[in-house]
Length: 149
Image (tube, rainbow, N blue to C red; front, side):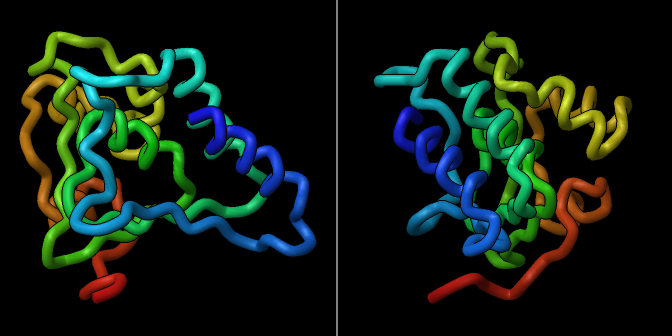
């Protein structure tokens, strides 16, 4: 997360050459979120990075392929536009299932995007959300066939 923060600082300063930021995962998933059993960033650092994403002067577009869970779900809520792959994208906030609080800002960003009632449903049920449902909720702007092969 420290290198991501440094890169975001550089991107923010280079408006002349960088007109848009595309944020996606490599391989089969956008991100499964935080590694709760492994080396994780501090909440302060993760929150700083997500705040940087939200505050960039350039538009930030999330291209979601595969799973987008928990911490990654909080990252997506900070992006300006979210697109997802029709074949394999799915979203889920599992904070409640794991017994942890969403401390990276998802608890206030998601209600802004989908409304308070829908955000509570997402937070409390930990239900997986399909691309179609994500679009209906307003979480994603559009569903696309694929990003890359």
